[in-house]
Image (tube, rainbow, N blue to C red; front, side):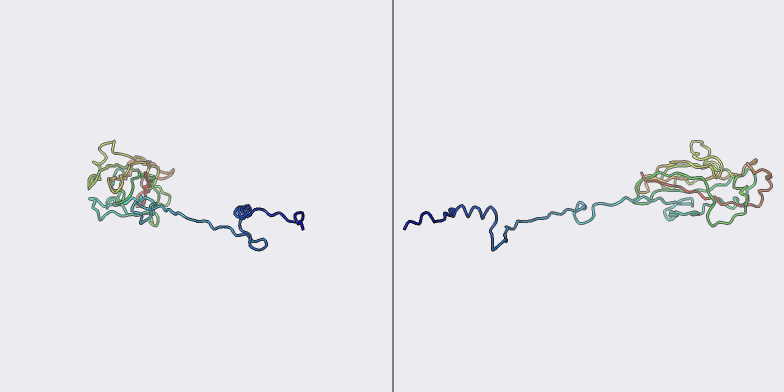
Length: 235
């Protein structure tokens, strides 16, 4: 019998294999198996040159002061809130008479390992926590201030008296007590590389500016406690 007319034609086996490879092997109904792929990850971190520590950080900027001349290493300290360390103008400063001046030193520098920076001197403000007898601030308003600056290292610039003001070029501030300040008064090197030596002069003038109705004699027996801030910024 001739069965040619009823025989199904099937695709060659090679064609079926190519179809399976292209679409994925089919197991059962609706299940497809895909081949796994290799994966990899790579990490890096911000490290130091040795690769065993952090490679990012911040610099240090810190200023320290010394109010006792002659200056030595043990006298430098940090005092960052009002009133700060006490500048000593001497016993005569409590017995001012018209026309007299008194003096006190302070030295400032960066600490070891600090980067460089610039100091500005702010006008005087009342010292926190210090009781004075100057209710209407007549004495405060009468006092005048001058500041002289020397820059050096070691113990240079330790003299602080009337001779310190002999050269006008050394005077960086001159005026009323609470109205005298100076921006960028001195640049300090990094790592205690230099020191700014300041000499403060407080004067009670012979003819000071006084409130209306206040006589010069009314200033007797009064006291005042100005405080100064050396603001600083790194450079």
